[in-house]
Each structure stands twice: as C-alpha cells, then as structure tokens.
Amino acid sequence: MTTSHAPSATPVVRPVADRPMRPRAWSAASVGVLIGCAGSAAAIVWLVFALTPLAGGFAFAICWLALFVGIFWLVERDLHGKLAASDRTAQVLIAAAAAIVVGPLVTIVGYVAYRGLKALRLGFFTHTLASVGPLAPATQGGAAHAIVGTLMQVSLALIVCVPLGVLAAVFLNEIGGRIASPVRALVNAMSGVPSIVAGLFIYAVWILQFHQGFSGFAGSLALSVLMLPTIIRTAEEVLRLVPGGLREASLALGVSQWRTVAGVVLPTARAGLITAVILGVARAVGETAPLIMTSFGSPTINWNPLRGPQASLPTFIFNLIRSPFAQQLDRAWTGAFVLIFMVLALFTTARILGRGRLGSKKRSRRTKEPTVVSA
Image: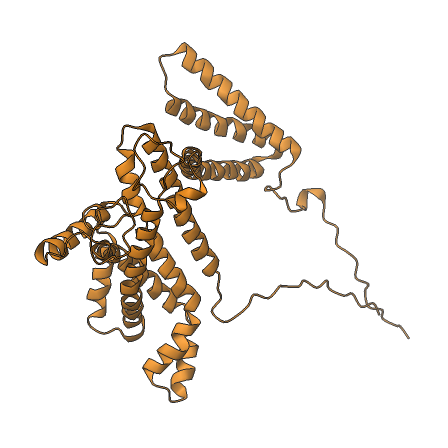
C-alpha cells in the first residue's frame, strides 16, 4: 500500500536576470551622476557660447537643458541599461517642466513679498491715507479703507451671485430641458468675457443710464458678472458628482423633486458648493479694471457702499504704483502682498474644503500575507 504525500510548498527563487527591476529607485550614485552630467553640460555650453557669436541667458538655458538630457541618457544607458535610462530621463524632463511652470510663480510671489514686507506693519490694517502725504514714510498710513471696501464689495457680490449661481447649477444639472444647452453656452461665453468689458457694461448701464454715480455697489455688480460663471460651472460639476442612487432612493420614497434637491442633493454637495463660491471670490477679488470705472476709489473709509466712491485693494495699488515717490511705491507693494496673500488663502481654503467626501470615508487597505498550511 502506497501513501501519497502532498508536495511541500517551496519558495520559487528567480534568477538574478529574471528579477523585476525598479528603474525609479534613485541612489546616491545616481544623484552624483545627475550633478556631474549637469555640470558637464554647463561647461560645454559655456565653452561653445564663448567661442561662437551665440549669446543670451534664455538660449544658454535651452542649449544646456537639451545637452544635459542627452548626456544623462547616454550615461544612464551605459550604467543601468536602456530601460532605467529612459525612465530616469523622463523623470528629469517632468521635473524640469514643473520647475519651468512653478519657477516664475515662485519668483513673482517672492519678489512681491520682498518688496511688500518692508512697509508691512499692524497700522497698515488699521489706518488710512486721509492724513498721510506722499512724502511721509511708508510705515505711516495704511490700507484700512481699501480692505474695508474690498470686503464690502465682495460680500455684496456674493449676495447676488450665490443664489443665482446655485439655482442655475441646479437647473442645468437636475432639471435641464430645451433651454439648458443655450444657458450652458451663455455661461461658458461669460466665463471668457474680459474684466474690463464687465466694468464698461456696469458703467454704461448703472452709472450713465441710471445716473447712480460711482459707488461700491456698482463695483460689486461688475464683480458679480465675473464671479457668476465660475460659480455656476463649478457648482454644476460638483452636483454631477452626487451619486444618482441618492436621488433614486429619495424619489422612490415618494419625495418630490424639489425636496430631493433641497434635502438630499444640496446637503451632500455642501463642501463642493462652498469650494465653488470661494473659487468665484478668488476669481474676482484681484480685478482692477472693472473697479476703476465703477467704484473709482477713495483715500478714506466709505461705510456706505450705495453712495459715493469707495476704495478697494486693487484700486489702492493701481493709484499708488503710478506715483513717482518711493514711499508710495512701497505702500503699493505692501498692498500687492496683502492682496496676493488673500488670494492664496482663498485658494488654499478651497483646496482644503474640496477634499470633502460625498458620503464615504477612505478606508485603509490592509495587506495580508498568505498563510502556508503544511500537511
């Protein structure tokens, strides 16, 4: 009588040549090769520019990048093979493209911060320019009137845009119909309207036709024209992310459509709708052209946005940057720094709120090792 034994599970050992490679893994030697190739390319390009009529920093950078990528690929191919060379060269190109895109932005923000921090004091947020001359030190006076005007104008624009934007998004996504396509096309066309056209429209209708004069409310109307398309388009995309099963479950219980939208769809998309509003505010808070011909600007605080010119941060910067005095220029750079900080804070807030989930939380995935049962 023969007994059969189950074959024992033995680990399969692959040959070295058959093991999977990880071309993305970088070591200290790879970083050294990268630096060496960059230095070699810079030396060769510098020698070529010194011996030829070629000149210019931009041309030098383009030639250096092309030569550096070529040298790096050849060296990596000889050291690690064609696969690893292609993968690492692609990583270098992607990193270079990211640096080209992010570099100017970092340079602009850094330069504005460098110029703006010189005159930034607490009094900049609490004082105005009513009793400050153009030759006074930049640390005197402030932009309290401009900050108050910007907050008032943006708040009035939100009062106009939020109900209209959300209702329009609900109509486009939940109701639709024959006029949905024309409305969507109109919204897309409005999103490409230059800001100065919005200002001219309000100036021609509200100020010239109705003889209302310059005011903060006129500026808020111009900002509303710019904010409304952004809020509608973003809110519509957010409403599309709401699962259709939620709507079907509510309708299956006999709930009407408008109560389904008000009680199920909108609460589910609350975080995304808040993000849409913040993006709309960030789109319009830095506009200057429409405010020059609507709110006009003022050196003092105007607490009544319905009557009289009212200052704002964009007009504050625009009026001071044209001055020939260094003190006024420093105040303008400080105002630009505060405005950029406000816009960055709004986009950061929108990014954080945009991470809100539509009803489900991410669950961590656990990997379990297979258990080997031996007979």
